[in-house]
Amino acid sequence: MSILVIDVGTSSVRAAVVDGSARVHNEFVQPTPPESPHNGLVEFDALAYAEAAIDCARASLAAHGPVDAVGIANQRASTVVWDRDTGEPVAPAQGWQDLRTVGRCLELAGEGIRLAPNQSATKLADILDTVDPDRCRDLCFGTLDSWLVWRLTGGEHHVSDLSNAAVWGLMRGDGTHYDAHVLERLDIPAAALPRIVDSTGVVGSATVLDGAPPISGMTGDQQGSLIGQACVRPGMAKITFGTGGMLDVCLGPQRPDAAVRGRAGTFPIVCWRQDGRITWGSEAIMLSAGTSVEWLVDELGIVDSAEATGPLAESVESTDGVVFVPALLGLGTPHWDYGARGALFGVTRGTTAAHVTRAVLEGVAALGADLVEAVETDTGLTLETLRIDGGMAANPVVVQHLADAAQRPVEVAPVREATTLGAGFLAGMAVGTWSGWDEVADTWQPAQRIEPGAPTDRDRWAEAVERARGWYPELSSLDF
Image (tube, rainbow, N blue to C red; front, side, top):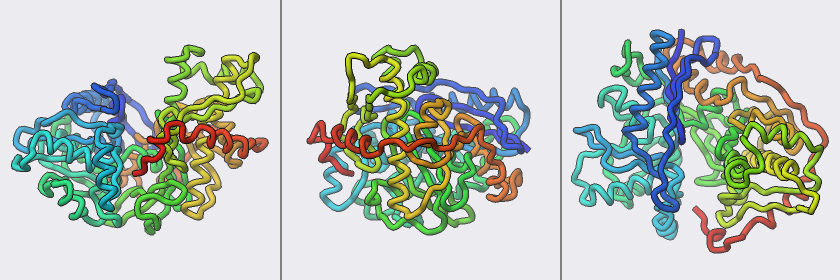
């Protein structure tokens, strides 16, 4: 049996087939970069995203042939609003990185409603205030999973799964219902909201695709990566090194105690919902990972490509005392300091491009170890092994320094982006490709396992991070 997976990312959409041996093939990709018309604004054409996704899906099916089901993974919290009758978006979609609602979030915080601008709640309210101030239009809201299901089913189904919905800021803390108080305060009509469904289970038929295969799996991208790396038992964790970095750990049926954010800066998440039962997790966030490498390549020009950073960094034995704190967009977990900025310490006349490059890679890995410590603090768990995916998982300097800084083995995923596998597993379990979570767990075969070497100087690292904090005090004081 085989599953078609459509993955709607931040800068591209892709479709691929996952077979019963958990192999990914027949992949097709289209770039879909968002636009930034003004500082802090991130928008995109939702119709173009859907058309690109469907084009990729049709190309994958043409190359492979019929499939048994469809799985969908997507960037979380990016917000689309469309007209129920015409099926057309009524405004540019707002990307998850969009910060235009910072002021409203601060205002709501003063009322005891804690929402962040990277959640969907205030993005949705902002779009409605613009296109439907009287709330008299029949509009639909959804993240890209909802929007894509709507397009694939010809408008028959308006749904989202709980792994996505739980990060919108519109749900009650226990994930059971929409929060009536938040809806009332933001003047969001309940009729505009999607029906929440299980992450694994048949939703409807993708009638715009040949064979009309059933859509039977839906997941947010980070939860998809967690599942794709077979971290499906309590205490199992992964880190995805993309533009930013996300550590997610599976916890089980018990929700974390923190209402919004733990004392070490982690967040409760829904890993998946199956047969109405929720599996909870915890998430730690690094704001700058691949972004720091892009800075080396695009702005500094000291290396030609991201792929070249590993060989350049390996050309020197150490950073020669240079330390880089990847706070180009501020610091996430555990500090949540939006006023922190990237910092380079220990530079001398003898510092070379290789030293700086190695310092940047080691800095990203050191932040990864910070995420591990934060999750262990907030959950009380000990993460015995780390599984990693994303572009930087192919960089040997990053992988080894992560193992050294965290002092535990690191296993590299067999595919660069495990999200596709995760969505495939969810869809496949619904139609019998995999019998259950034990079989999913048994699919894990890491590309390599890296053992920790000598410990790094974590005290020195903590001192560097502290020096990078509070560079813009007015931004450091923001808290969501």
